[in-house]
Length: 213
Image 1: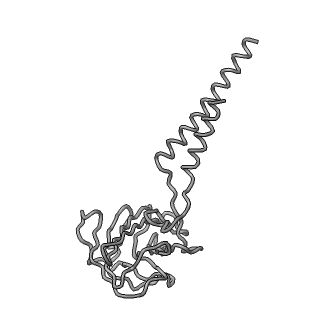
Image 2 (image 1 turned 60 degrees about the vertical axis):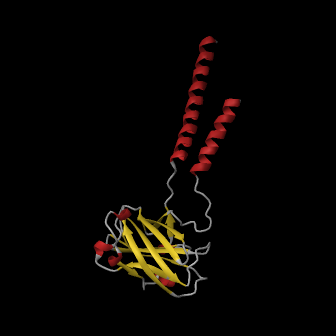
């Protein structure tokens, strides 16, 4: 009975860890978000604030297709002002400062994007699969990140334009890419192994009882 209770506890614990986490404020932060119409196009965006009116935005192309052309944030509480791209560092600085290939955005993705960094040069300037880039942006007035701040990106893949806008539905919706953490897989494996062990033990006992009868 004790073994059975331990097994049930282990399997339930594994399932609870593997299950997607509840969405919270800025649930898009650091999460791989994919285009609903082309799930192979995915990007992860993390934004940190400070000092003062400065934002640092880290973008990683986590998909298997597509190149980033535009990325930005929108916030209903922001008073439009001016902003400038201070730096753009690609791939951890191994390829130097990439400012010349990016600029302050003028695009508005479905009128949702308050501001965005856009590709300024040819297609080779876009953020390709497996690449990362860190943008440092200064605002006047400040752009405050809060629970209502949304994310939008625009990419190209296989001659198709892909968009991802948080808080929307349909073709432009963002789809989180749920990847189980290593500890989740370990617990799940432990639970399944326990199930297999209990089955083998029952078969062995059953066979013993038949032979001794």
